[in-house]
Image 1 (cartoon, rainbow, N blue to C red):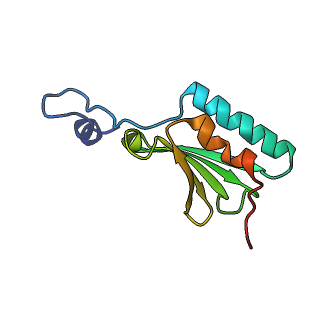
Image 2: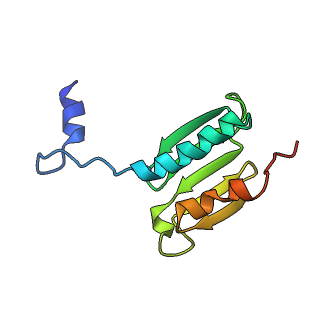
Length: 119
């Protein structure tokens, strides 16, 4: 690490700059999502997933095959917690399928009907 690298990481007062906060799923949220994911894998519907912790949102993406675009995304957006709801399920086309304040209620969309991708 060069002196320039160290200097770029320090604020004007010589103290380290705080890292930008990232949004992640909490343990209970992740347990609920992974429980659903496990059921869908056992049914042969889902095959792979990815988790992204971004500045403004956390995303759990579900894939039918690893090389494809996600068929569903379960998104946590803290900025929308007091408005439309903290959680959302987004389809492959970007359409919001379900939104709400309670993760369990939002995830029930996968139990109520058999969702399938239209080719």
